[in-house]
Image 1 (tube, helix red, strand yellow):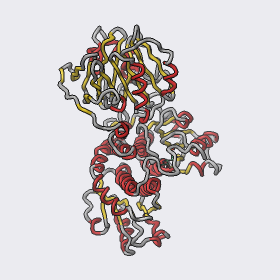
Image 2 (tube, rainbow, N blue to C red):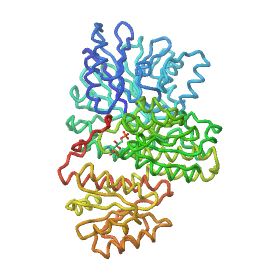
Image 3 (cartoon, rainbow, N blue to C red):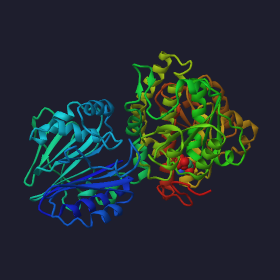
Image 4 (tube, rainbow, N blue to C red):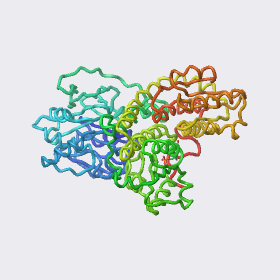
Length: 607
Ligand code: AGP
């Protein structure tokens, strides 16, 4: 996600800002920029690594003592210099950096354009620069507060003004911001990593709080300008711990980040009231979609597992025949594609070579194409005809976790969106979206069981083979659970449809070959119970992922991890969470490098 750094003091602001941005590089970004006030307000931005920005401002000789800086993880608008932060007001006197999503930016932008404000970027953030300009009557703090009173969405925000060289105004709602308290100087940052080398005294801003930083002091207010008393905390973390948000590994941080990541993806899109989903970039009209005869989903690895869930969702909710293809197979098979085919490419990185090649093959044959992508502006994102970003934020751990659940959440939204162009009723759509919006808090409930799951992992980490089994929508979850285990713990694990066991795999079962079952209370529950009984009859050990309230399963399985009930199309998101944690803890117990597993890359950009 984006990174923010700010400084006001008597030192050279440029150096402090650049070194602060470098401390935030681990968060993932695609462009960066700084705004510095000396005799006037200078803004310098660059695409790519911070070293590109450094080269551009090396020539900056003015002595600037105040500045704000930003690393951007693109959400609205491709990673270009124009879209990089800071964004400026029309009069070039105000500079703004922002982390978060302004949900009502389109509406605000239209109103400001009608008043004559000229926009240069595709970002939601630029709205803030012109809004503050509109409200500025000489008091920057008041202008920011007045502007935030009409903003909906999340922000971590820093603002400076060319004519007010003695202050920085910052505000927070939903995106972390911390104030570093120095002697005759003050700092701001998205997280402590950026400023820890200058001060270990910090004030954590809470949501809907605004702060005015001057050389000497820090004053904090609520959005009605009421002054607030905040305590100064002392940081005792080391830098390494901070980059992981206090977690031991990026993978664990990203597993724990899933409620927020899914919320970010749903923000401004899923509308229960309308019984529909608002998507900006699908670029398919109802008329065009009416002529689509079938959908082909293509992807690799975890994204392919999300595709299998997408197949079920699109057929159930959008009522259209759908098939899923490994991209590496699809691209060489001379597939039958025609203008009635819609191809959906799913990719976290947007750079996977096989998926990109499959996309190009389908386009070559006349298919309309969509992308379900995490990295904004990535190659696949730029080559599809339309699509949606999953807004999972940067996924640093090689094993995909939050990207998978955000892909599934996005596929649910896409299926509702396309379904509502066909026969999906408003009430069914509202029902699905209602359940989807509850997913973040249900994931939180499961994450609270981390210690219990760790204890179960300790019982299973000694085994060297596993079967993961599930039916229907639980089958792709079984595949994903098996992939998680094998790729980070190097233990052999296979996912299978539960009913397939008797066609061979059951020959493997013995007391040293455990099985993991995903067994929601649905119309296939009894049949899955029979599969578990077949395993137990052969002394196989069983770990069940079951629904709260299912007391029967405890009589059969050796261990049970319970997840909250949910709509059947949302259940794959929930049932994946325990499997991610199980794999994580087993891999740790085996001393594996969970963030960088052997032989694997985060993005497979070669064949
Ligand atoms: C998942 O944990 C793996 N890292 C891998 O299977 C990954 O899902 C696959 O390489 C596809 O990557 P993409 O989503 O970036 O295209």
